[in-house]
Amino acid sequence: MSKDSVRVRIAPSPSGYLHVGTARTAIFNWLFARQNNGKFIVRIEDTDVSRSRAELIEPILNALKWLGLDWDEGPYFQSKRLERYTFYIARLLESGHAYRCFRTPEELEQKRRELGKTREQKLDKDWLASSPEEEQQLLAKEIPFALRLRIPKGETSYNDLVLGRLTRQNEEIEDFVICRSDGRAVYNMAVVADDHEMGITHVIRGNDHITNTFKQIHIYRALGIEPPQFAHVPLILRPDRRKVSKRLGDKDVAEYGDEGILPEGLLNFLCLLGWSPKDDREYLPKDELIRIFKLENVNKANPIFNEEKLLALNREYIKNCPDNKLADLAAPLFVKAGLTTPQRLESERDYLTRVIGLLKERCSRLTDFISQGGYFFTDEFHYEDEAVKKHFNAESREFLRRLLSGFEAASPFTKESLENAVNSLAAQLRIKKSQLIHPTRLAVSGTSKGPGLYDLLETLGRDEVARRMRKAVAYLETHGE
Image (cartoon, rainbow, N blue to C red; front, side):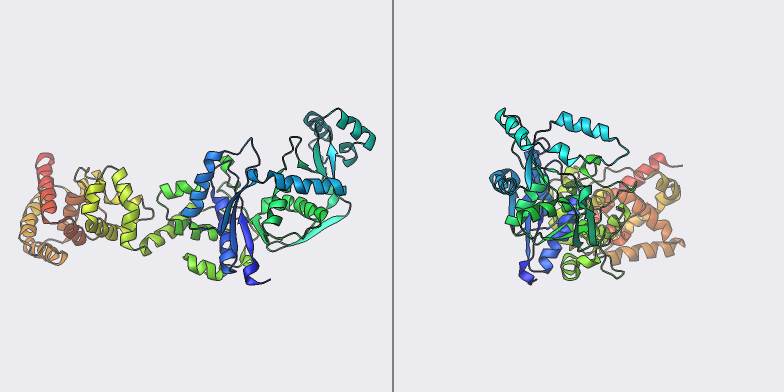
């Protein structure tokens, strides 16, 4: 196989948003294409009219773009290729590999009930087919019919690039429908025609498609077409060990972005669900993933989605992201939270960037910048109750008043001069520095945790620090012991 011959695809159905299972499959296909200098193709499988929703197509494509999965061709739409499917269906009917089935849905359901739940519900092939004479009579009466593929005797095998050699007895597969009575090709028929005409060389998808793969191989063989290579990757399981899916209400990719997950972090995390670099590394930027990704390192076991691990990885990506880029990402969140305005952020761009730099080491999500840094944009905060009990009292009120004088005299207003002011007062009062540091932090931020105090004070600036300390002193005079 030459490096430039690889052609892979992701083919989401617009019956729901892009959930993490389909996103992970898209990532594997994209990495395989990029590593092999191949083509990554997007195809929208929208032939199921009853379930497909046109308004979901754009969100699906936007989610792929957000993850950084740029495609080389597409998006193609199955709904616009119906005539191509008819061409291949006609070939199968003419060659005798397909036949007309006049059984009604009610007859099929009754037959399956007769088979019983304890037996494999495989319909009898002779019962499905009509005699040539009966078929002509039914055609003359214009009775609706579906088209079924005639499955030969024997067995079918193929070499799965993840699971190895797989074999299934053909008698386990019923003569399945390839074309509905309304003339529309079913999923397996459309997929074979699309993958063949689009030159797909490798079909990388979830292992819940193995049954479909055997059916598709029969279609390929009946058409005299060489199938692509297949690789079935493990499914992502929820903590309750059920498969993640849109039907179970699992979050779509866009929701993770709304919750403050970086696309790089989610992509890295999803790669590690069912694939391993074969070493202890977990932080793997996109360029490194392209370099080392190999299908043979895909695991067979279904992995569990661990959100704590996702947050740990996202924290690393936030930590390593440039402050100015993080500022761009966080700015709309501060505005949405009502902490500032776009106009203020535009004029205080350097201030926002500095705030981001102070907070990033403590954030696992972009939204953490809001919960942990709102006090940088407003003094309308509530003092933490537990912190008040520990650090606010009559003694600390006097400490704050005297320290305020030291801060107002500090020149320049830098973290070095501010630290000197704290050290000087602590020595003068013969107290521990912590007796000044904790009340001061609480006074200016309302919280007992955060970035280094002197960085915090310098960033807020002399006037704002003085105003907040006076406000805290007034609070203590009103709420003192």
